[in-house]
Length: 610
Image 1 (cartoon, rainbow, N blue to C red):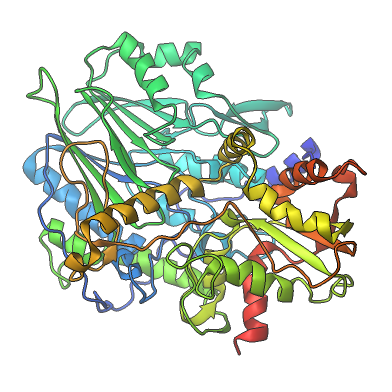
Image 2 (cartoon, rainbow, N blue to C red; image 1 turned 90 degrees about the vertical axis):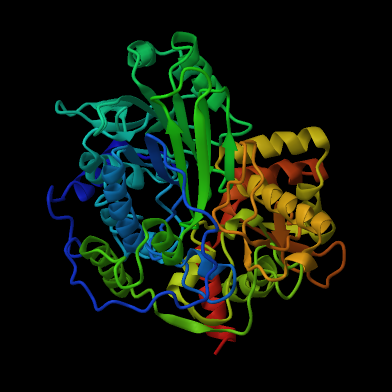
């Protein structure tokens, strides 16, 4: 449904109320008594970080995971630090940089929305990540860039434009992303969400030029626009932004450093400045990755979900030929932080960091994130268990939970059905023990609706799911590109996990059993990138689409074909390819239930896990 400018105005009024210096009740939260950490025996890093004269700490795809990973099942404890711990780490690292008399920047590549209760658990009338972003804005980020998850809902984009961007003082970048707002004359106007670029000088006097680029995303809401990267580099403003040579280009953006369009940006800069150092910080695919496009550049991607903190160092002063770079992927926990800052559990915390932790804990209470739906009997994983199986969270969602939850107060509950969703609807594991509001929003954060088409004969309906998963090569590539444009990254992330698991199988897992589970990275940059040694997670392949168990009916029985709204166009295309009696369109699609996808697991837990 198109958002009218009248609605746009309503959103504008609703989101405009903010204070410049005090962002809500959690901004100066009471510092709680120090907690005991670590609560699990964590493996420390096996070597110190290598510092250069120019250094950068990188975050990306945090998706609301600001209280870190709090479950006991491995590898979750590896990522048990929270944003307050990270803030203390940054504080100590800034002090070390001053002592070493070197530069240290802090940058982020986007996707602050959609992921946990802290971002998504807001009360009715709220806006996703409005409260959780108040804590991120307190960190001393030098550059932040927009992600695709800032653009799925106009209200989220407007909230960023109105309430978050001002706190970055020109350092929040959206080089190829605009929002339509009303200007001072009351006219609709398309303007950048943040700045297109920024230029600044570091503590050591280095001149920096930065861009903030989003990949070619097509799933943005109305009244937002994303320009393709190829067209962006042809803009006059782009040429003007890069015309003056800085000491170093720091390019930050929500775009993968492999198999995407960073080379387009890189080549456009290189055409003007053949030798200027270029440091690139990407995101979006949720993997640890590194590329060097030439000897005077490095491009880093630093994982997801506050699991990974990226580190890059460069020796710029002594470089006449190739620059000496290092990169590191840090496990996000206090043992990592204390190791690299040479602190202990009693000396690591800062008042600043503890205030952020305390504020986040209070926000969790305000959002009632500990609300208990039931007690999960076991772990259910995304890809550590086969699909379908009793240990798969995908099976749990679509075969077990959806048929129970969507039948509640539903007049069509007695009509046989097949339910289908994309596997990307699920974002994380469900772990044994208390299943809370936060767990529900972590596993399935999206507010997708369930649609249906009535009176599809079972023989046809039962072919939709396998057809979605087994289209021909050409159609598969077309679908993959469409899903990629709409923001689906699971296939790239899973391919990365699969390759990791295959390498472990070749080496032999038994020889590495003294290690804990975690990421084991192989990238395209020299040397070892992982900061801590681990044993890779076992991996089982996952289809792009998953479905409920088919009903026990005859082939000619009319049934309901139920699916999430995100895949409506895919389902219609397949359905029309399977039969020729009727051309199905959006007019044949109806709302199946008011229950949303992010409510399914909680309703199931209430019914079955108590």
